[in-house]
Image (cartoon, rainbow over all chains, first blue to last red; front, side):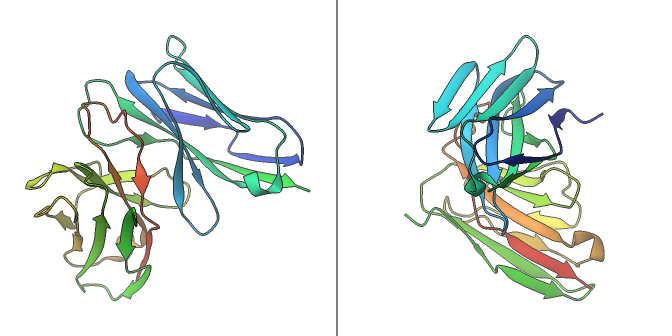
Length: 111
Length: 116
């Protein structure tokens, strides 16, 4: 079983819809990252969370440490939000040995 | 700042050839890492470095070497390329490992490698 599971794997929605992408993990973590990858490959960091909730523009990320679950929400979705969204965790006590990634959620927003 | 740069963007190798993927950052970041991204799989860590002169293996290190002689540069060497190494390679950096990678990760644009 993967240590980081994302759902859904694929999501197609209409412009303006409220989008939710979920991430569940099975290991103890010290930080959770949400990343965005547009077609063509570039990866951009959206959020880094260790507790609670963060908001940036139309994007909101939440984390529940007890339930080992995080969500990424997009309000008033737009076609430019079409991308792959990746959840990644840094293991607690894992030192510097990198992030563990989910397989990503491929989001398409249709006009 | 250029951020994290990678060269080349694309590369085709024949089986058995060697090459070096270059990665550089101008943010004075201590922590640098190499990942590979394959279809249907999440990014996987190849090697990482917590500072100049210090490197360590990640999840999938076989067939790759790294060195970190300066803070800025972290090249990845393929010793004898194999078709299984066909992938997209990303270099990333952050301010420090902080014991927990609780710092924003900056990724390079990627190198798409094909081994025939």
